[in-house]
Image 1 (tube, rainbow, N blue to C red):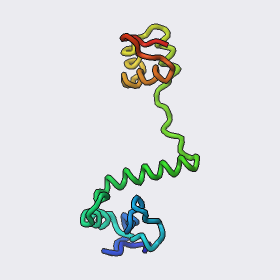
Image 2: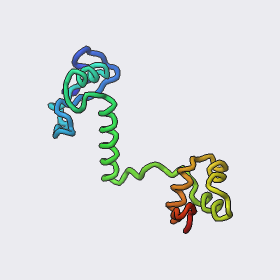
Image 3: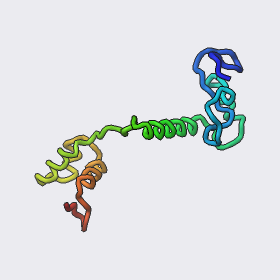
Image 4: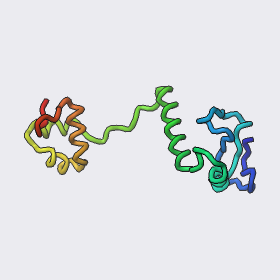
Length: 131
């Protein structure tokens, strides 16, 4: 039952909708499968109720992954924007700047430079990156 207060203590702050039968186990979002509880009682329910979903951190990860999957299907999720300018990596690389100097100049991680090189079509062969 969905309410505007915790059905256990009556507070109206930090409310969550607890699924009686978890969605991962076939439970739906219908009102008869949900309880409105505050965050403290939601954690308490998951601590008391044995099973796979007894940690709020696990539930948060599951809910985030589920939300991303729904957004992808709806065509709304495009992923995180790239934070590394691949054209700049390519320009520096082709001008002879080493990967170490590239990541120092650009303020990015070394792995990001190597990933950018791979995405640009370079492969690592015999301790060298070749196109």
